[in-house]
Image (cartoon, rainbow, N blue to C red):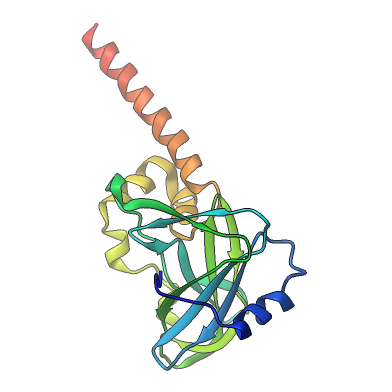
Length: 195
């Protein structure tokens, strides 16, 4: 997140044009230059909103339309195993925060948008034209080799794993239920083996 960001009056006008949205949070995506997107997050409510982050990064991934015109992630969230990584900030009423993300290059022209998960709700930005490589729709090897990934997949299955790395609501809740059931079963087996 850009801690020094001060929104311009023009940006505030852009958000006021989108005010009819029913969402508490509105996202605007702009291409800053050939290597960076700017993503602005606006609190539409009359109250302060808590915005969660991990190591000062919003729970935000980039998505693109595939060859069939369906939205698919081209980035995959990697949760930290350190509990000190999880923080939250406040966005004041009508407040705007800014973050930036990488512009990808490739041979496939498509629509790009960003997806934000906050307080178990999903918000999407507007979409803009961009270029990616089709291989970006595949989950990368460094993600699948991550030990947390393997644990989630073995305890919760691929469906819950995808909910977690694709920033879907309730992904962690569903995994915790599966993890708790697994640990309970292991404790029962351990007790049974003692007897």
